[in-house]
Structures are given as structure tokens and as C-alpha cells.
Length: 379
Length: 251
Ligand SMILES: Nc1ncnc2c1ncn2[C@@H]1O[C@H](COP(=O)(O)OP(=O)(O)OP(=O)(O)O)[C@@H](O)[C@H]1O
Ligand SMILES: [Mg+2]
Image (cartoon, rainbow over all chains, first blue to last red):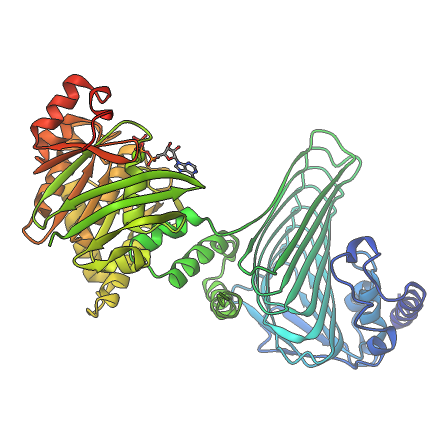
């Protein structure tokens, strides 16, 4: 395989993008996020390339700048770039149109304890490739600047070798005027583990889409996330986890708070493929509506082709419990503070899974700020 | 003027009139007991006093220390010293008991223009009160009322009363579900708060509690009104004869 392979994949991606056209609400999985209504293919093609920045590269982590000529790409970049996970339209666009991005590799057995920070900023398409070799581990904090302009479209590929372990926290602050799309493809070998948290605070249209392949025995994926939306904010997390092999495990816990006229979306599809016997999965999504005109669409979905499979799912949209609210107020806690307390309590369970204390605190800070916007009481 | 004056109170819940002209006066320094059959409106009265929004006052009024209580929000009432120990305390996952106590105490203090207490001072205060009520450190760390037994919930209500030191305490069947020892603990807690500037309204089904918390007056609530009142001996009479005898008599 050589550099030409990358060019081939890029031109395929371009073809796919043009053939399929912009996703819109009649596409099954874009029902609640009508991208075509606010963006056309030309705008995607001409949006430029978004920027990335890595604060410091830890020992044992190799970095390749995808803006460099393809001939300079190391073997692992050539092997994986453009191949991980399925190839949805907007992900193809990021491959076809991005003039850059970053590829990172953690070499075999290297364990990087301190979180590595990756910041995405500016407008346009950008690509990310993350390869963890066997038994390597890494904590990645992916933060987004709110200067996304018209569109930021990120294509992420993650390859986890056997026994590799990645903790991924994605924090996207509110960008009310922008369209922000991110596709994350993950493939996991035997005994690999992907833990990810998605904190979304709303864009004009925000779509985070995951496709995770649990390829081999013992592979695990644990997703959690919070959304706090206000104004006319929108955020959509759509996941598809495929249990390809038996003895694989996945869990998902998403909590959403929607105020104002915002819209919170979760679609979680789990496929247990033929032969993936003894797989175990559960997913829960809960939304709290704190605005009269806010909306939440929660859609868990299970497709099972195997035996002896444990799957559980649930979804619930609700209001703050009036009895709890009265109890707190009758103890002297003012209504506004009591509501905040209850909302925080609601979200807690979904923030807790973030293992790194510093990252957890960073997410809470954003949550607090977003709550002030989301919980404006209109009377 | 009495501390609490309830005049001809009519309260509607879910479109149904529950209190139908209830009149009651409680002077500072006094403890009054309210007894009455199931569904007669005792809890409704307690919620109306604490300010639950879905309990609509359609006629009559409540004055508390010469102010119109009905016009105040629940939090305002709490800051002004009204405390209701609920018949069914609410479970609140995700909020630890200790953090709740601190938040509530400081919110009340803030509303009264007093300085807030730091975490250490609150902890000290709570620990001291919790000790006498046998509320364990472990319970304080757990989410508020979540998974607490019936009796533990009641003890926690009384712990709150001890921490907030209210002016008017309303105890709605705090004795139900308590074992004998806990009943004595709770009664001691209540008696410790008896003071010339405080008043208490104790709702109960059982004479037994009133052996420990001796009331100045006993009222019988039936069909949404007070139908009889008297001294502490009235409780004994009720125990002997039941409510049927009183229900028809006007107050
Ligand atoms: N939301 C509601 N809608 C309609 N009726 C209600 C509602 N809440 C309470 N009630 C009714 O009001 C009446 C009085 O209830 P309340 O709880 O005040 O009785 P109580 O005297 O405290 O009874 P108990 O001794 O069983 O505690 C009952 O008949 C009850 O069913
Ligand atoms: Mg009752």
C-alpha cells in the first residue's frame, strides 16, 4: 500500500458525497436534524479547513500533520485514513474537502496517564485519526472553540488494538449560529475499551454521530453524555454500536436538559450481529424539558441476530418533579435555586462516568454556564 | 393576637373542596394537637400552611404573626420560621442530605439577612443535632431520603426541625411508622424546642404521642372543619369513643 491509496479514498469520498447529496429529514437517521434545509453541498465544499491544536504531545505518542503531502504519510496513516467505520455522507465530505487534520498514534503498550488536549477551532472540514496499538492507553480531551462560522465538519477515526484503552471526552460549547457536525468511527480489537463522554451545549444544528464496531471478544464501549440547551439550540447525538463478536459489551447513558425553544435528540441503534452470542448492551436516554417550547426526541433501537443476548433500553422525557420542588422550597430554598439543584442532580449520573477529575470539573463548569441560559424562567 | 390565626379557611385540591371553613387559633408558646379520621383534611391543612401551589385557598385566610401567610411563597414562609414535617417526605436522588441541609439553612439565613455558615460550622451543627436523634453519619452522606426506611425519614424531618429552629412547626403524623424508642427521641426533640416564642401544631392519630408531647389544646378535624376542641383529656376521650361520636357535632 502507498500514498496513492489515500488519494483513491479521497476521490471515492468526493464521488459518494456528490452522488448522495446532502442529508435531510427524509433520510432515516436525519429526521430530527434537517441539514439540507440550511446548508447546500457547495457550501460544504467551499467551507475551507478547520484548525486543530495539540497542547503537548506526550511521550510515546506520534503525531502526523495531515496537511503534509501524502507521500510523507507513515505506513499507519496510509493504512487507516478513510477506512474506519462506515462512510456516511458528511464524513465523506470531511475526507474529500479537508486540507488537513491530525493523525496520532500511541505505540504498543504505551500508557499515557495525563489527558492530552486537542482543540478544534475555526470553520470548515477537518480530519482526525487516532491509532492506539495493542495495550496502549490514552485520555483525550477534545474541546471545540465556538468560532465555527457557518459550518464545522469533523471526521474522526479511532482504531483500538487489542487490549487498548481510550478515554475520550468531547466538549462542545454553545455555538448558536453555526452548524457543527462530527462523525466518529471506532473499531475495536479483542479486549479493547472505548470510554467516551459527549458534552453538547447546542448549535444552530449540532450532530454528533458515532459508529462503533466491537470486532472481537471482550471489546467494550461505554458512552455517556449530557446536553444542556437553551434559546433555539439544537443537539443531536446519534450512535450505532455493532456487536460483531460475542462476549462484547456496550453501555450508554445520556441525559438532556432542554430549555427555551431548543431541541435535544438522541438516536441509539444497537446491532447484535449473527454469531455475537453472549453480548451485553444497555442504553438509557432521559430528557428534562425546562422550557414550554422545548422538545426532546429520544429513539433507542435494537436489532438482534444472535442468541443469549442481554439488551436493555429505555427512554423518558419529563418535567421537574413538582413534589421535589415543593419539598426543597418548603425548606427555604428559593425556586430558582431549587430547580438548579434538581437539574444538577438529574445530570450527575451522566457526568460521573468521566474518570479524570479535572475533565469532569471542566464539563461541570460548562454545564453551570449553560444552565444559566437554559433555565431562564419565562412567566 | 395569636401567632397563627386561621379563619373560615376553604381549600380546594384538584377541583375538590377539602377544607370547608376551618377556624383555628394558636398562640405563641402553645402546642396544639389535631386529630381526625383519614381523609378529613389534616395534611391538606398542613400543605396549605406550607404553601403548596396546587392547594388553592378559595375563601377565608391565614395570618401568621400578623402577616398574610397565604400571600407568601413556600421559601418565604420557611425563612419566616414556618416548618412542616411532612407525612410523606420526598425522596430526592442526586442531592446529598448534608448538602441539602447546608443549602436550606443558608438560604433561610440569607433571606433573613443573617450571615451564611461555612461548611465546617454547618457540619458541626448538624452532627450535634444528629447525635441526639440518632441519625447516622452515613445517612447524612446519602441522597436525601432515598432508600431511607419510614422511621428514618421521620427522624430526618425532625433533624431538619432541630437544625432550622422554626417559629411555627407543623408535624404531620411524624409518629406514624416510628418504633417506641424513636417516638421518645422525636418527642424529646420536639419538647426541646418548646419555647415562649414558638408554637407547634401536632397532627396525629394516636394518643400515645400526646403522652410525650403534652398539648395545650386538642382539635378534632372532620369533614374539612374543626368539629370539637378541648384540653388534653379530649385525646383520651377520642381514643375511647372514636370519631363517629364527634363528626356530627358542630364546633
Ligand atoms: N390532588 C387531589 N385531588 C383530589 N382529591 C385529593 C387530592 N389530594 C388529596 N385529596 C383528597 O383530599 C382529602 C383529604 O386528604 P388529606 O391528605 O388532607 O387527609 P388526611 O386527613 O391527612 O388523611 P390521613 O389521616 O389519611 O393522612 C382526601 O379525601 C383525599 O383523597
Ligand atoms: Mg394526612
